Amino acid sequence: MFGPRPRLPGTSRAPHRSLPARLWHQSVPRSARGVVARGTAKEDTPAPSKIVRDMFDRLETDRGGDPGQEASGAGAQTSYAAFKRLDAAWTDMKTRTIHGIPPRTVRTTEEQLPATPGMDVVVAGGTLGVFLAMALQKRGLRTALLERGKVAGRDQDWNISREELFKYVSAGVLSEEQASACVTIEFNPIRAGFAGFADIATNDVLNLGVSPRKLIASVLDNYRAAGGLVLETCELDNIWVHPNGVEVRFREVSSESSEQQGRKQMAIASKLFVDSMGNGSPIVRQIRHASKPDGVCMVVGSCCRGFEEDKNASGDIIRTIEPSDTAANLQLFWEAFPAGSGPQDRTTYMFSYMDAKQSRPSFDQLMAMYWEKMPGYQNVNLSDLSVQRILFGLFPTYADAPLPPKWDRIIQIGDASGLQSPLSFGGFTALARHIGRLAGAITDAVESDCLDRHKLKFVNPYSPSLSSAWMFQKAMSIDPSRRRVDPTFINRLLGSNFQIMSEDEMVLKPFLQDVIMARELTATLINVMKNDILFVPAIIATVGIPALIDWTGHYLMLNLYAGVTQLGKTYGMRQRVEGLGDGQARLRYVLRRALERWEYGAGLDYFGDDKDGHDT
Image 1 (cartoon, rainbow, N blue to C red):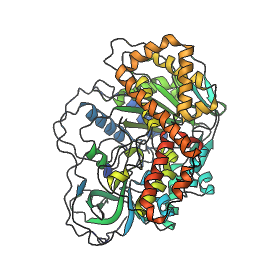
Image 2 (image 1 turned 90 degrees about the horizontal axis):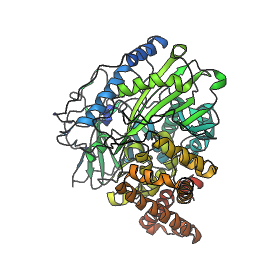
Image 3 (image 1 turned 120 degrees about the horizontal axis):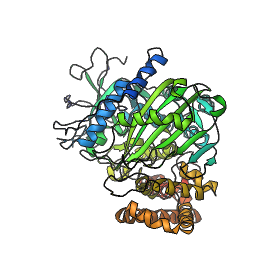
């Protein structure tokens, strides 16, 4: 347990009692809760599905009465109680009409901190925050890591490619030996397939299973050895933003004192606060108060034992097995990977993209569909399988991502910022692409004192590569307000596009890794129109003219960013910027971020060397 600690320098303000909190979704720790008002709209709740309850019972039976280890982070909890909490939170998200006052996690004051902050950066949210905290500590910053629970990984594999995993090595987070030791399984090929179309295959995309438990333990050891301060079992209360720093207030969480009242408030001062608390961050909820997400991805799945070893050597990155369900307004997608826990273990996910309208299905309904359809998808009998884990998560996305800073000295990263593509589940793999850039940018910001919100917005700026993915998510979901829906439309759209992309590996693989680039996208669009011009009116009718106009703007910006990036390389802009003297640190910070903005915004970092956040 984390014992009582004295108040740290720069923390003289009296404690402020926090407002009541409520869980937003099952994967969010209490440190990521926000205020919820009374007056929630009610929805008729159907009786729980028998097959769902039975499979959770089987999970406990197959695991000897233990539903499995749970940790913080999306998809990390596996019990029936956690599943019901998620479903209740999803119902609340769909139906709530009265929101009350927003949380007041962040407050501002014109008073100066009485002393220079003892820390450069406090990172909140340890599951992914430990990676960034370690990268910043490696660069010489004084950092602290705040986490409500223990900084620990879950049992379930994270999937990533070897190239993406080693971006953490390049960022100084792990050694090569540590990264390799965390790999539990490696497999190829990876397939994509859509009903009515031939499968396509590629290699080295999400083809590693890594152990989050081993991975995070290794990073945490490195972090402590590098001098990082770990504040485990400490729940965030609030943050006061001062002109010369931030005062982060928190309380120790313990089984003896589970309620906030009666727990001693402590505080730490730093120059910058980094919010890595995920989609349910109380800071993000303060910013986005009463705003429904523009889209969500509902995910259910399991890891089961009992698959034939010779048929468990490859993965599916995306697959459909049937047309869209026009009655439920859903297109169901599947994903499956061999699991590192044993040669007969396999993880399968079923997911669907949609909005947060009240008519959308419950998690109980979606999980029931999963158990009914998964045996046909994997060609197995449920009775032959032993359930190791049951998985579920809700991933909201916003069209205005990444989220710009609202206050000085506070910035979001990872899922809290919406930095991931709306097509992905976010998290570990999405952060890998940006870890070197983020560490370099935040170090620059601290060292050059570019910590006001206007300069911090350069760290996670507008990205046309990210924003252009929105039309793809819209095309992969079904609007319940449409009167006529072609059940073959989504399969036809994806099947024809993937067939075209498969003709060039350097078009297909970046797309599968959530990187969209101008030249490759343009070539694919031209070929789609050449091969099936009569399908174009159906695409326009489904997506809608307003969305298409909006996407066209992002597409044009994607091309502009690509052109500016190429001009910068032609005229050696990187070398010119690095040649600026120490007296021009703030100008160098702004220009470095501009070069990164154009390169990453065009997706051209896919071909670059991101070892230190500055190299091309």
